[in-house]
Amino acid sequence: MTKTKFYACLFLAISYFALCAANGLSQTFSWTPSERYDQGQDTSLAIHASGLILDAHRTQTIGGRGLWYHLGIPNGTSVSWGGSQLFPWAGTWPNVAISKEGYVIFVYSTGDYKGDSDLYYAVGKIDPYGGTNQTIQWLTASTRWDSGFHSSIAITQTGVIVGVHESGSGGKGLYYRVGHLTNPNGGDYTIAWDSGGYGNWYDDGINPHIAINNLNQVVEVHQVTGENYLHYRRGNLSGGTITFGGSPQYSSDTEEPTVALLDNGSVKEIDVYGNVYARSGVLNPHDPWTVNWDSIPLLLSNDDSDRGRYPALATNGTYALATWTSFSFDITGRLYYSITKLQ
Image (cartoon, rainbow, N blue to C red; front, side, top):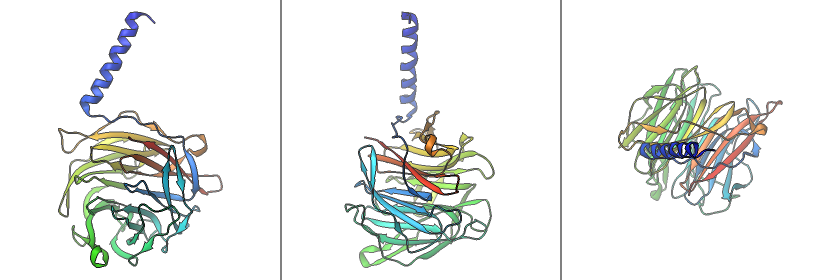
């Protein structure tokens, strides 16, 4: 290489990193090769600050309604998983969150299709510093909280719960809820909904997922109905109301997104289009409604686990973990994960 070409390449590289810094674009992290950890489908994830991981998923066969969970702990570049345990309730689209104290918020859909589905939740307790073979101790019965389908739930360190879901009556609408545990110190572990008795419409679409940080900043991602286009909405939570900005498209030819948000404004996103891809971004410090996304997603799945479906994503600020489903030729779902260290 000539000196002229060398300095030209060096200039372009420096310019690129300077541009990334100016735009607040996040660092690209090294995800581990995908690794199979169970059978199942439709995964969901939560990670406690301690590092304890909670995975929830549906049974591996098409049409199956058994719901299962794993506990795990990061172990370098892999995860040490405990045994698979059965939830007391059956349904579809399980979703989980873990509070600072170790309260587990578990939500699921009753319907196989959105044309006729309700949403239920249950609250349990785990020791966030305990082992991976402990069992969730359930503190409430399963309780209906809305008509809806394919939900996503998240909780802050102060106990604010946010959820989004599709319409449960066949419509295109997406709705949000905001709540908190009523009085856990007094033995009342039910959810009090600060946003009102019903879901609040905020957009049209499918496959919604929401993330919230401890500054009450919110990022929601979803897919356009009937299209492989992804949109996001950045917002802020005050009381029981989320104020969202616009709904710009951030990806085409991908689907089924999931998102995580850190207090430093870093955004992590996973989506699929045959294979599984990771994307990073950061909250724009100058525009309260914008996320600056990296332009090039990173491939996570490999030849053994391609055709990924419905990924899940969680982070505690130290690790980020992604899981997804791959279906074999006998229509049996297999679960894979990839992990990256953020610090």
